Each structure stands twice: as C-alpha cells, then as structure tokens.
Image 1 (cartoon, rainbow, N blue to C red):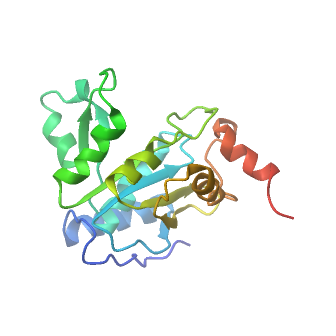
Image 2 (image 1 turned 60 degrees about the vertical axis):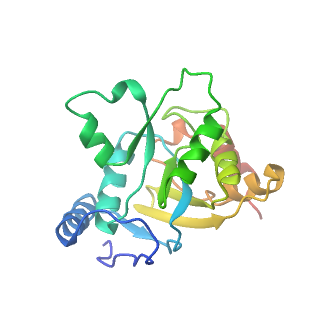
Length: 210
C-alpha cells in the first residue's frame, strides 16, 4: 500500500499551490496507487529528466505527484498550442512556448530561460516520444551545462508504482562519462509498455552487472 508520507521540499525549491491542492494531489496518488520516493535536492534551478516515457498515463502520475508535493515545474510546449482559452491555464501549469520549427539554437534558447528567472525547474523527456526511440537525446545535458544547473534524474517505475527521484548530477562537460551514469540510474525501472522502451534503456538489461 503506498505511503501517505510526502517528501519534504527544501526552502529553495519552487512551489505552487496550497494545503488544499497538496491534499488533492495526495488523494489522487492514493487513488491510482502511486507514491513518490527519494530525496529531492534543495535547488531553485535544475533540469529534470523523466523516463521511461511510454504512455499517456505518465501525465496523470506527474500531475498527481506535483500537486501532492506542491512543486512548480515547467516544460516546453509547441507555441501553436497557446491559444485562447487554454493559454492562460497552460502557463499556470508551467508550460513554456517554444517554436520547434525555428532555426534558433534550442539549447541556447532553453538555457537562456534560466538566466531570466530566479527559479526554474525544467522537465524534459529525453526519449522524445512514447514509442520506441533509437536514442536518448542529449539536449537536456547541454542545456543544464550551458545554464550551470544540475540534472535531476527521475524514473516512472510501474513495477513499484513509484515516481522515483534517482540522482542529481552536475554535468562535467564530458557526456561520454556522464551519460552512461545517467542511463544506469534507470536499470531495473519497469515501464508501462516495455515494447515501447527506448533502445538505450532496453540495452541496460543486457549490460547489467553479474
């Protein structure tokens, strides 16, 4: 049975909501049978990466967890989605518009958002799709490196029904060293749809230590 204990947040972590919204989030987590585990670092700015991302159900888990924690997290949404009457609601939920068809440097654009704000937790899904992806995109790594913020690794574990806070890493600038450490955090994490798991995460089972 999932625990009712909420992970305490440090004073520098961006907040949203109140006691009532946290209670709603906790009830939602209990209803779907999930919990949040691990220690969230006391950081006002960070790039959060979430995986495996194989189902739309992930969104229900994320909304419930964020409400329960009272945490404010932002994410990029295609700019054309910001239309009346939903644009204001999307911004309240943390959506940031981005033109993915523009020739602008998306890494630089994303990193610049951190210099514009005193607090920013930017969530990204490195697999980039709910279907099986051949790669784990490294854009999140270079955004964090350029912005000078840590990467917080988070897993959706459908085996344990847990949102797991797995690791906090300060990018060294050497992705060949750092990215394997990040990927290794997901060893043993069970996705909702194993057949949609990205290739790098599938290969973790083949390279598991004896």
